[in-house]
Image 1 (tube, rainbow, N blue to C red):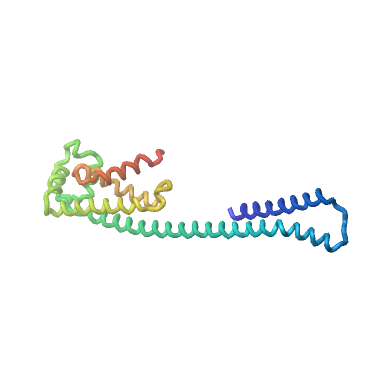
Image 2 (image 1 turned 90 degrees about the vertical axis):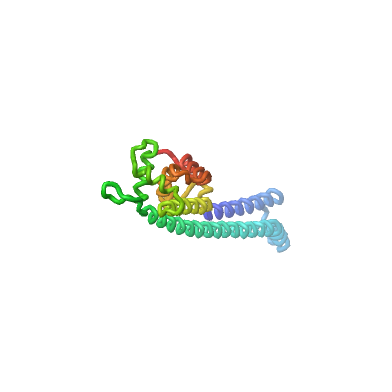
Length: 219
């Protein structure tokens, strides 16, 4: 970009000088002169036209440089904001991972966690009605004061917080998220079927993930 702009300005300047010389020759010919006044008049003609033009070029160059610096400053600010949001998303992901390890009981001597219920929701256990453990989980998760209910409520809060920060991610308005952000979004989206079954998913969160899925390019 800088090189093209410099070549354009240099080419324009040479073209202008060539045009001025051509116009002078066309008007006064090419007869040699040894008189200082003639050379002085030529210098006044040449400098009187080119000096303001070059001053204008210099001014435009300063404006262009300031504009470029402003763009760089804005990009640095956006990158800083993106890094801060990434750290928040990482913390939320870690918190969601810990919450999914909350115990929800046992079946056949095997301890179950919310993580298992997430997998059951993904396969459609509520619709199929073939998982007593998942049915019990849905019931207990809606009982105020239960440990599982508190964990689920915290999961909902963390997902909502993630959405709030993702909506402030600077690059998303220009075509999407960074791959690492996409990774955390994909992990979080696995919780949605379970939250849908629990009736805990807010309309705003549902619309956010729906738009992401719709705008994601198909393979």
